[in-house]
Each structure stands twice: as structure tokens, then as C-alpha cells.
Image (cartoon, rainbow, N blue to C red; front, side, top):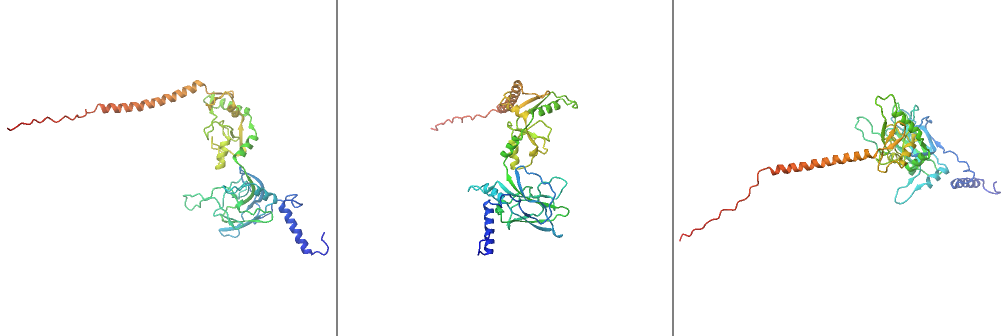
Length: 386
């Protein structure tokens, strides 16, 4: 209620001030129920599905997939978009960052910008429009450097990856952020822009989530072994199969053997090493068969996990034999010793060959002409004339 003899304008100003202060402090009726981020777009929403990025967990859409709207028929186009962070979103970004003096500011919660083609027929991956230029709140946004190409009349493309806009954003629930995009219109091809609030995940976190998802039952792999070794369609009967519990990536024994559910081979690879490699350079390609190995399709294999933990497997041995009945056993010690002896014998044979070469060279040298021995000069006799 307005106090008597007070100025109405002053009352409205005070109410607005208290409302803003309560919002900034994160309390009061204005923050009891968070409202979604307000996004002002110049363009219609795009019904496009963009591929998920395993190392980023989405926490909110700041700008839903929207069409980069071209105005007129000019080649170079420009569009502007705005979004406002909620109090919770601004707090998440500001309170989860590394501000040590020895490192640049790293944000765990990020304002992420992505572009993709306007194609509703299938899931789309990241791709930059040609001649792209992005400004955030009037400041130029760094983009990945284009990859050079030798093809004539072809513009170099930038590596397909998301862009972190956080360092250029206003982390305030009362100030709008403006994103200005300039690009070259490509006739017959449209583009989509997306801005999300995401949380950056590490390979350790993804490994933990993969383990928590559970392992594929040992019986599944055992049946797969039986099927492969008892396939009547094969002309050559196979009674057993030799596989390794060493990762094809690191050549060391696996700790978390996994493979995609979309692959039908028995060979596994180490989940920890695979995730670390994709954290550096995301390819999500199976190291065994080169097919797609998406994170959501990965599963730790219970059968090979049991093999690795088994006391029957010697510490120095990584190869095992799979049997037709789905069982396994380590390579017999006799075979292992025989293989080692064979290697040693081949090595000795090589050493003997080198030694015989040296001796042959020495023999040729001895059979050559004898060295000339210098003879002392003859004695000179002196005669007296007297």
C-alpha cells in the first residue's frame, strides 16, 4: 500500500528497484518459479534435430533451432538474435569456473553456439555456413580456422565444432545478450542456428556414467562365440578362436573392455582410452572395424571383464583361446614357450649371420697379397787411397 502524502512516481521507482534487487539476489516471489529464457529471434523455428555431443550435457535452450533468415537476394546476409539468462543460469555459469591465475578462465557451464544445415530428413551434425562471421555484444567471436583445400573454386571449410560464447556474454538476468551473424547465402541450402546452456563433461565422467549404465551380460557374448564358431555356413570349420585382451589402441591390457552394440565382432577396446582420445579429437569410430561407435551405444562387456579379472589368466599373457562351447582358456604354456624359443632362435640366426659375414670379410683380407717388408740398405765399404 502507498504511504500517505508520498509521491506516486517515487513509489513506482522504489517498487521497481526492490523487484530488481530481489531478482538479482535470487530470492522473493520473482524467483520461486524460474521462467524459461526469453529469446528474441529473427527467423522461424526450425524443425531440425541436431546431433548430441557426448561431452556436453544440455541444461537449457537459450535459442531453440532457428532458421538463418536471408533478407532479399543479396549474397551476403546478416541476422541478429537475442537471449536473456535466468538468475539460476547466470549463477550456474559464474559459480562453476576455474579462475586460477595460472590458467585462462575455464567455464564448466557454457553458452554454446552451433550451426547446421537446414535439413529435416535426418539428424544433422555441426557445419558452419560459408564466410561466417559472428559478433557477441559487439565483440568479434573467435571461430575455428578454415582447413586449406587444393580444390579450385572451393572455399575452405571450418572444422565442425561448437563455439563457447561464455567469455563474451553478460552474466546477468537483466541484461540481454545480442548475437550478430553474417554469412554468405548458398542458393538452395539453408542454415540453422542453435544456442544452448551446456555443462562440459570430462572423459572420467563419461566413463563413470558408462560403468553405471551396467555391463552387457556374459551370456550374450558366450552365445555370440558359439554362433561364430558353430556357423554351418562357413566352408572351413573353426573349432576355436584366438583373441586378445590388450586394447588395439594402447596395446596394453584393458581395464574396461567395451564395444558398441551396433558391432558384431568379439574384439573389445578399452573404454577409458577410447573416451580420452575422443575428448581430444571426437571421431567416435570403432578402432576394430572403423564403423560408427557412438557413446550411447557403448557397453562394457561382462564376459571379457570376467576374463581380465580371472586368476587363470597369467599377468604376462594377453591372448586367450575361445572354444566352441563359449568357454575360454589361456594359451598353453608350451605354445607360449615355443613361440618365445622361435623368436630367440630367429634372433640367434640373425646374429650368426652377421658374425659369419664379418669372418668371411676377414678371410678375404687374409688371402690377399702378402705385405711388402722393407729391407735394410746394404752396408757401404770404405777403401783408403793411401
